[in-house]
Length: 205
Image 1 (cartoon, rainbow, N blue to C red):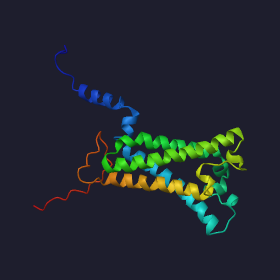
Image 2 (cartoon, rainbow, N blue to C red):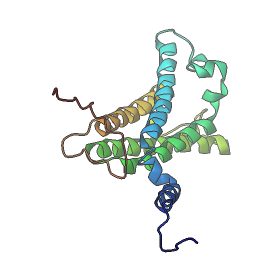
Image 3 (cartoon, one colour):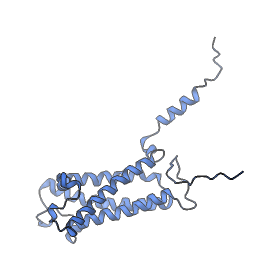
Image 4 (cartoon, rainbow, N blue to C red):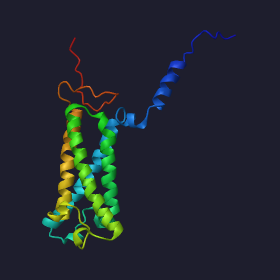
């Protein structure tokens, strides 16, 4: 006969597993999954920035015509460069990712991450204008091609290389201060393990 007063040894383990499985996705992305999420997001942003840089090299170093200067992937898949919907979709996804992953940052890293987020917000607005013109078939200011606001003064290739650069730089600073927090900002909260900790050296006996 089983004694009902005896506590189950499996109960704590089951409770912990249930608690972990019930953790909201957003909380996981800013805690235990913050590091892999940042690595994946960072790699995507860096690859996109490198494509813009390659396009600039093709124009100014190799002397290619602008329509033929499509970065690396664009040489094989031209629609990656010509599709306004794709550019807008990327800008929107990037903005959402900045917002989702921001609560895992604190202190100085949070400041730089917010700066990158707000720059990307404006970058997203510029792409929204381009996408709107592509949808309605009417370009701003009577121009022959879709135009964003700052494109009135700066060529599109150089402008969007600039946008991606000024988003990437504060993002990289945020990740640096997140991995190597200044004194007093070591606590990342909610189980985030992004902070780099040097190995503890054992003292000689």
